[in-house]
Length: 128
Image (cartoon, rainbow, N blue to C red; front, side, top):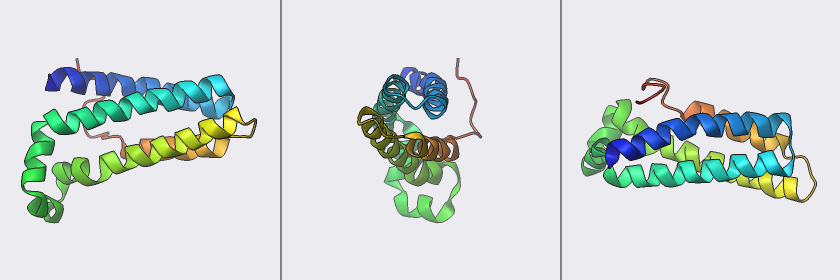
């Protein structure tokens, strides 16, 4: 189950980035909704991964040591999911603004920036 969820999470990353770029380029309700909802699904898959990932579960078991040592386990326990939740909040704020007729471009651009900083670029870009 872990490999399936990780692969889905990995592939969905590219759809989220595409929809995010589209939402910044064309800040209208449809691209805004696709971005926010794809990102919501991405976060849900990420939360599921937290429960089934041996890396995440092992890091939680030795949290103090992981936080001191840094590295990949700390990244996933501390930074990765926080960035995802922050990006999700910004994307949904942009969606709300788009639905009200305002300009959500700043919210989407900030959300994309946080996402780009939160993606583990040191990991394989595509998991097959």
